[in-house]
Each structure stands twice: as structure tokens, then as C-alpha cells.
Amino acid sequence: MRSDRYGKDVAQRHRRRSRLSAVLPDDPSISSDREFDVTSALTLPTGGQLASSWPEAPSGSQPLPFELDHLLALRVPGLIATRRHIHSHPELSGEEFETAALIARELSLAGLNPRLLPKGNGVICDIDGRPDGPVIALRADIDALPLTDPKDVPYRSTVDGVCHACGHDVHTSVMLGVGMLLAQLADLGRLDGRVRLIFQPAEEILPCGSLEVIEAGGLDDVVQIFAVHCDPNLPVGRVGLRVGPITAAADNVTVRLTGPGGHTARPHLTVDLVDALGRLVTEVPALVSRRVPANSGLLLVFGHASAGTRYNVIPSEACAAGTLRVMDRDTWELAPKIVAQVVRDVIAPTGATVDLEYLRGRPPVSNDARAIGVLTAATAAALGPEGIAETPQSMGGEDFSWYLEHVPGALARLGVGRAGPNVDLHRASFDVDERAIPAGVRLMVQTALRALAAAR
Image 1 (cartoon, rainbow, N blue to C red):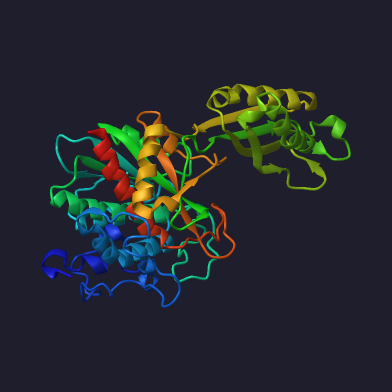
Image 2: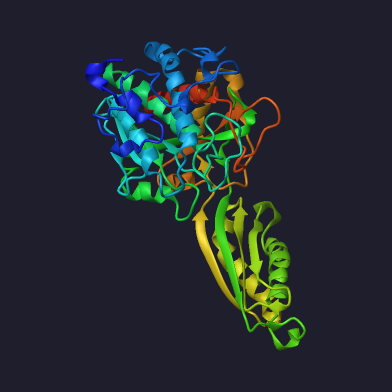
């Protein structure tokens, strides 16, 4: 390490339980700037499949320009360490302040000039190449989920009830690696335009964090945007690609029922909200799906239902909440009206009063054909032709779709599958094969370079 430039930054930025935005430069507890002065969560264990075992250039791939493969190999242990630190220190949607501080610190150490979003929980960073070149954006989401981490690993979450169970820690680490490599190209005068890195908060909640980024100017001058999302169903080295819709639209539906409660011995003198709630959660999903074409893939699922606290008391309030997902954009536009009508039709005979909250979430991610062409060529170059995989449309939602309402782009699925049974996304035990991080870096570097070249 060059202590004249970095001082104690390497130790500070990963110091155990540190508040990254408030570490003092003269902290006596940090005695050197050497890389082994970091937390135990950042220490790679011996044995197993480490990311450093990933070859500099996978079989059938093309080397990155200007010896960037060598630089990536040197950076891999640090990227793994960063991913593990983020995994062990997750932050919920809208609260990603320390994660954003870490990202800004890492980008600054790479010689870049990141800027925080207005709330301070996200980062935008431009890598400036040729000034007359196009602007390409690459996006990573950085928030975690409200789940308890049960994994027996050194990087297990240290925050009760919060866990990176969707791979956003991997997305963030991949994009940090991309920034380090592209910064090197920019320093050499070999970057044919500007690459904007977007580290987005609040992907997992509504309203979506992508809307904050757009409002803050994140898409200004951008001609194309790209992103990857972890896919545990694909092995490392494979990338799922699809032209057109790759995710579903996803909205939130909350129904509150009220009425005069009373004794369970005399339900005829009350509005039986438990009965009404049962009709709501069992009848409405099936009836809604009958109001739209079958190939629209509409799916209404209630994940929460509650009513009452006593076995012999009919409650005066009940509530159910869930998600509506639909593959077809036209049906998504009609969904709020359809749901409202069906809910009222089902509940009307019960006498309950209905309060329906339909919260618009996100449209389907619809991949642009030209952008997928860029990703296809980049995958072949980065991981070899065998890395290209077809992928189906998912019922999951992704707020990357809001970017695509403004500029063309595409979302790819990055293989992170581990040996043995895979654990699905949004399950607390979810984990990844960390060799996916250098694979993702190579993919997105190739994507940025090819997108810049195609947009000239």
C-alpha cells in the first residue's frame, strides 16, 4: 500500500462495526494501513472454492483490454472482502447510509468522484472518458431485506432481522470492481465516452428507489442502461438473457374491512369480518384472474391476513395485504380497476365496509433488443459462448423497469448457483458462489465497452 496516498483508509473503511462516515483519521485503534488490518468477516477462509480460483480469462473468452484481467485478479480478494462486509452489515431499504459511505470511499480510492444522492443513501459516479463520447449507465441496487440470517458463515449478518437475501451485496461488489477497472482505462485515455455507475437504494420497497435516482438526474444524457441480477438457478459463468419482458409488473394491494363486531354466539347481530376476510383471500384471486386473458399471467397472492384477538369475539376490523403480479403491460394498466370491482363484489353480501389501497409498484422490465445484442456479445467475450443462456420471464418484480421507461437498456441474470441444492431469492438462507463476482465484473466491463462503441 502507498501510505503517502491512502494513509489508514484501507483499515478504516472495513474496520469492524465502524461507522464509515465518521471514522476519525487519527483513530489510535488503527495502527497500520495494511490489508490484513480488517475485520474477521473480511478474511477469506482457507479451502473451498474461492473467487481467486476463477481464471483470469475463462475458457473461450476474450482477454480484457490493456491487461485488465491481471488487475481484476489482484482486486478479487478485496471485492470478496467488500461483499462479505456488506453482507455482514446489511441496511434496509431507505436506510443504506453506511453502505453508500463505503461505496463512495471505495470509488474515491480508485480516483473517481462519486456523489451521494440527496438523501445520502445512494451513489452516482461518472467515469469520464472521451468528452464527446456517449453516456452509458450501469446500475446496482444496494438494500437488504427484513429477514433474520440463519447461515453459519463468518460473514453472517450482524444486524438482527436484516439480511442480504437477494444478492444486492453481490451487485454492489460487481459494480465496484467495474468502476476500478474502467477508471484505469479512463486514466489511460482508452475509454470512448462516459460510464455512469448508479448504486441505487430502496429497490425492495415502494415507492421505488429508481424513481429517486431518476429525479436526481441519474439518467441525464444516458443513451443506454444495463444491470445484472443474481440468479441461483444458473451456475457461475452463465448469464440469462431475454429480449422483451424478463420480469413481471408488481403492485401492492391492501384491503381493510370494518363493521360492528360482537359475540360469536350472535353473528346475525354483527358483520362477521372473519367470514368476510376468508371470502376475500380465497375468492378474489381466482375471480380477478378470470377477468383477464390467461396468457397475461396475472397472479394475486395475499401474504398477510389478520382479524381479531379472541376466540369468542367477532372483531370490528380485519385486514389482508398481498401483491398483484402480471406479465402483460396492457393488463397491468387495467389491474387496479379490475381488483377494486372484484373486491367490492365479493365483500358486498357480507355487509362489511371496504377500504382498498392499491399501490402502484413497477411495470415489467422489458429488455431492448439492441441492448440484449450488446449483452450477448459481451457475455461471449467475457465468459465464452457457452456463457450465454436463454432465460424465461419471471413473476418477480424489479424497479429497473422505471429506467427503461426513459432510456433503452436491458437486465441480465448473473449465474451465482452453488454446488448442491440452490436456495431461492428472498429466502434468509440464500447465499452465492462468490466466483460470480469476477465473472460479473468481466461481463459488465465488456458490456460498457461494447455499448460505448455501438453508440458512437
